[in-house]
View 1 (cartoon, rainbow, N blue to C red):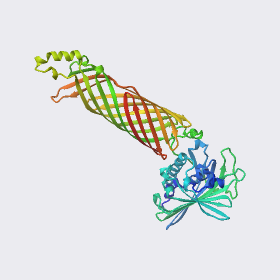
View 2 (cartoon, helix red, strand yellow):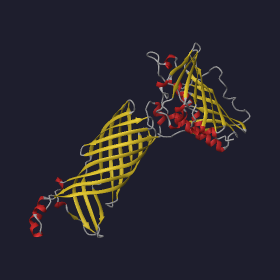
View 3 (cartoon, helix red, strand yellow):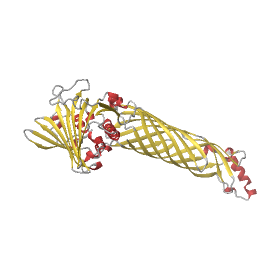
View 4 (cartoon, rainbow, N blue to C red):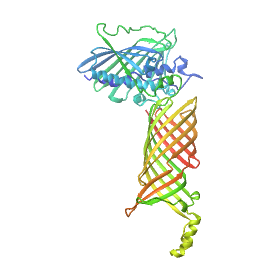
Length: 523
């Protein structure tokens, strides 16, 4: 019997989804009419989204042609215990092998990671509809949101849900799916029972029954809430409440399994969420395309052959009036992680294609001297150009990192970013470094649309040395000194699509013209 199969699915058992709205009563909603808070429906998606702490007795039965196997464990959850990042399981000694226990812990980590990151109102409000109504019972149907659902919970998009209200009181929510689910699950059905807490008002989940088939094996899970305590410490009682202490055989030793659940990042993320701050997912990967034109102000040019001294050629040119533009197209990947709710650290790796083009204007006195000597050199004075054209294409491998400090109040946000980049220019046999500072402020609109403005400063090596290998085998060494545009203005928009994808476009204007597009995915 493949006992470990039920652990694989346990990540989906601890949480499911809720309900919605469509044909609502006038100036109200079906949920409001029957005193049902969306929090109740969130709890149907995940028992860990209930407001209080609780103990659940869980019995698991696995059946196949070889017979049936039954297992017991007890779930202990307290959102105040280690900021809700840990959960405890009680098991009888010897009931689970080491491999089974390891699988169980992995399933728990997966399930709680999802719950901790889930938002409120998980259901699709527009899908809620009246299925049937009589004097004793009212049934509403609903579907799950197609967006903002955790990837691990993709199965719930295939579910049909029904809410049963008997004599004006929420009795149960049933979830079912006629389609095959992930990991080969078929004939899926889940029933969540509720108990009304009269003295405090509202509901708690009293029992969950779930069943499905995987490769000829039948799995049945029965959760019974044995203890429930409100966030302010009030212990709740209800009709038919089972005992938590009598669940295990009193003659056997019971072990406590403590599991650290989900991401540990950002540090202090859970307290920040409790204070009302909305946090992005902690880990992301971004693909970025960046293009910019930068006006370069050359200050000096020196060249030399082999090991000889470099000759300063600056006096031969009118560098102030010369027009040289550097065009850079950069393609890079930037993984990032939020260490704290206000501190993001990222890496940068990619490639840049650079073109330096323009004209070096000859110094008027120097040119006049060449013009005077032209007849003696067999040249026509008209053959002496006003400037020397420059067109150099070089590529660079880039690597670096960035640190961002950010935060916001309400819908207003601000951030400051420092970037360090090291570029290896292959054709010029040189390496340069750059430091960039980005200061932004913006406003968050509905539908995950952010508009921002700010400024960018770029500071990189303005004294660059390298060499070119000539066709005849000689080495041409060079040193150039230039001043790039340091600061320019930025404007942009960022749009989030669900909980994971976002797209950003950013425009830079001033002495440096920029256009940046970024596609990101957050885990």
